[in-house]
Image (cartoon, rainbow, N blue to C red):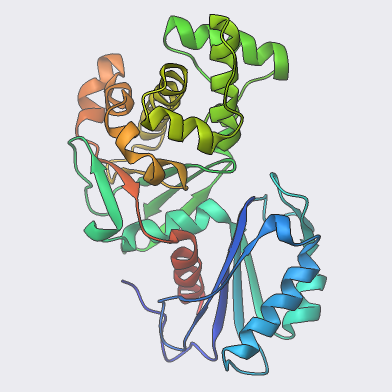
Length: 331
């Protein structure tokens, strides 16, 4: 694992991974790039981000960390990070740098996309941090890409310069158009297009997307939609409920196609990594789905994708690790 340069690092670092459901924070001791968990908050429990910062500073001090606060801060956010006001895509929270400075004092602040942080963590992940799905391999110093269905759908890529240093390519790949493959996927697209107009892959590849797929299939098949949450649908699929099983199978098949598209687009010979909370939770359903088959099904370029490894990230929080490494790179 890469470490921050102890000659230039000073003070404790604060890192955060802020999504649509949870906000996780950790501190990093001087000279290290290993985050130590500090706090985890549910987004729904806080009316606004200022309340989070107030709680966070209290938790920081309760840990016996420096009263002066963190010397450096990196927040990985599920939102475009370059805007003056950070507005989260899948939560009501908003903040700007002035609010951060008010609570964090003179801390040097970096705000990055949450999947940029995941991408930065990819080269540091070990075999114990992932589960491989199917064959293929990860070639060293070749592009690596991550796609993560969670509250939304994140995508980011890491490439390497001539010195082997990782360079992160951020984007909003979760909002590319959904391209159906099977006849039933075309029917689901018709249903979702009538509801949403444009249909991106995020309309299918996230927690709400599981519900969208399930409800579309229920309507198409003229069956009642018995379950209302992604957790209930996933649990029912694990108990072999037919409609829930079909919905989860389609979810992972579409994920496989989308991951394969990303591999072709980015030349991801370093591997494709599935992040977010859904894939690890339902890895049994993923393994018996068409995920890998759809990843490989690229026509004349099937031989190309055959050699690319696909992995589910099981590391507890790659976003915090990536944010810590990001600060280490800047030190």
